[in-house]
Length: 239
Image (cartoon, rainbow, N blue to C red; front, side, top):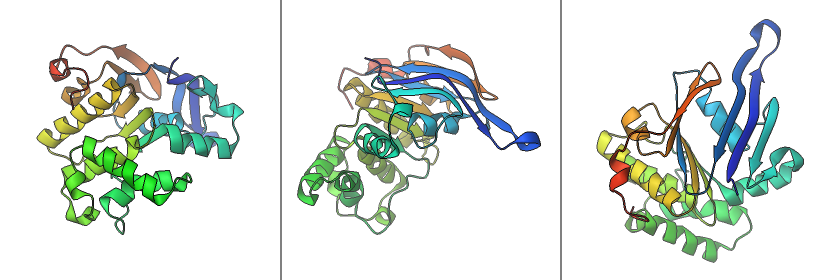
């Protein structure tokens, strides 16, 4: 079953002379195990695509399906529950809470979903372990490097049983070495059965994806599979 599907999705902001068409009839299908990179110039609709795919915004027209279920058929509470349980979002600026430790940041979404603090912490530690930052569990975000904060943000996005990972410029604040490490982690997450959509401006990092979607002025102008890149060196499950 397709993990994430957008069918003829459009998004319009404003009215009259101020009307802006952020997305126009966008189709996108992402199966489990697949990582899709979204590229395009500034203002092409990349971030809008992600927020709609993650149910953070509603499309003006079209349909979004998660695991075959249409979001439009769900109540807001059901959408919020699905978002907490199935969708992980990596924001460009990390969005870690400064007053919480790394493991508290990671386990918070589970606690908000009603899981006990003890069980949520165990799951949070497991996610940090997978991403190689379990030794930073008790550190606060301000005490972590940029690369470590990004790994914590990804751990928060994949904690629990989430199977859709959305990332908006996840390497934007990182140097090339850390950026490549993040892409390796995102790729490994998808190889483990997740479905991923990332926005990136870097063609070299996009080469880690299975497919690249190009947006311009809100429209999909091309979709292509990248040439064999560094991801081909990975063995299944390798981080």
